[in-house]
Image (cartoon, rainbow, N blue to C red; front, side):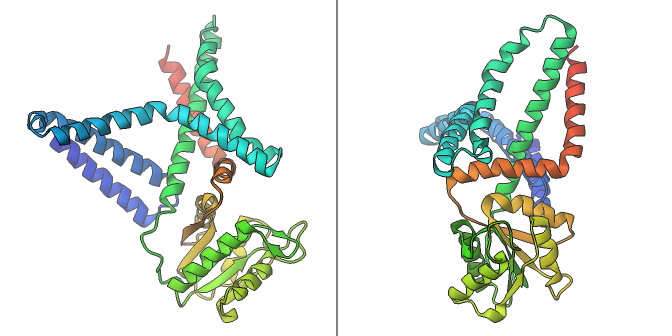
Length: 338
């Protein structure tokens, strides 16, 4: 049996590797990775059961495997509690550092809603005294569960698209996405993106650095021009910098930057803040741009809040598709339950 499971793991590994090589900028990267790990875990469980007698004579290894098993079980069971506490604490930090703006309340709101979904919502199901009320409860529960699973897969896919074994990619262009200015001054968040682009430029010596960003409200100049000036101050040769100064959104960043490229099938690296990379890659894929993404670091407390905003942005791009799937899954669950 365990041999069959190991074969299934090998197949799932090949599928995951194929997705990551061919097109990692989809949720399939997260889905295939998850199923690969499930196959591995089940296969290892059967291996342990098969060779239990042998392990009894190797106490150190046996206790190590038992400890890992309990650690995995604890992690799975404690995950909801960890998520609630993490988003709640980081939500407080965001409010303290960034103020009581609606956009800064996402982490706090998510932790409260998740707590309510796991603790209060199950009791509401027991209040339904009629078939319609019970079915409506099941429908909403499955729909909410689908969104939570989708968020988990999105987050996992985003992390996988940030992992690169090497920085030297023989790139032709490195696009750095703008992120707002304070008058004419580059913000710390934007500076981190530019610094990451400059770092990658050292590894890709034939690449051109495209600084992409137009002039927004409260800005005294186009972001691309301020970004270029910052890079020159950091020692980058002006001949290796191209400026895109018309864009007002990520979609336009990609579209207008592409117009500056001399090659039709150029090798492109996309640089933005880590939490924004995956959605930017999805937008680039929709425009037919082949690229990989590198993420600049930012404060952790800000990352969780921003990741939720990015997920909402992803839903705005694909809501029709996921709405259909979620409704179908919920309807099937309602029918099966009766």
